[in-house]
Amino acid sequence: MLHRYCVLSGHRLQLLHRRSGKIGILLIHGNSSCKEVFSKQLKDLARSKLGIVAPDLPGHGASDDSVRPSKTYSFPGYARLLGELMSKLGYESYHVVGWSLGGHIGLEMLACNPAVRSLLISGTPPIRLTPAGAAEGFRWTGATALAGRRHFKPEDVRRYANAMMGVHISDDHHLVRMTGRTDGNARYWMVANGMAGQGADEVATVMSTDRPVAVIQGSADPFLRMEYLNKVPFRSLWRGHPVLIAAGHAAHWQAPRAFNEAMMDFVTAH
Image (cartoon, rainbow, N blue to C red):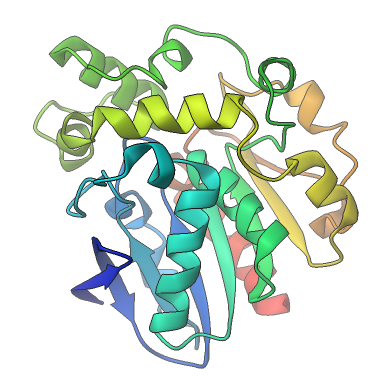
């Protein structure tokens, strides 16, 4: 895996990249996180013939903050940039794995980008982009209240990072430091734009697409309403139901063996 930078529409993104076959897999991290959150998936993916792309979103990790935050920090804004990235890297077709915010970006890409051949989401209930739609899919907790907050105090950084990962991680851990590094505008505008309806109707997208969609989900995720997720009328849901793993919001981090086994079964089948 190589660290490299790409400049896209004036945004400098850092990414991990492994060039292999003609088909790629794009790993999209969550809100106030970074590409390294997928570190436990890279070894298994490297055994495949897939090209691997794991970027830091604008305003996150080692990527630059956006100079147009109200435009960039939205599901369509992120999706356009990542589609441009995959095209620039030479991929005409690719799988998308999205965790949390990354899943919403993946759903936007599925709706708008024919190069997406399959989508795997985790920690992401497909919702209608309205306050009522969000309330149907998500539980309101102290941590979700931080998701759109522009300014984080040190205790907010710790609280949000630990809640997202589902386990206590030390203050000097890279994931905690990257939570603190995140541009607060990225949180603010992502939530504001989403609740203003900027983006595809995610429920309509999964109801209508004939491309395969997998849900690999922590069964103890404190932020999702599992009863809602089980009722979403997917048209092409892999295995016909969400694949549940004994984990919280970050199933890929907390239970990587089980997650990776399901992930590899899905992507190699499609």
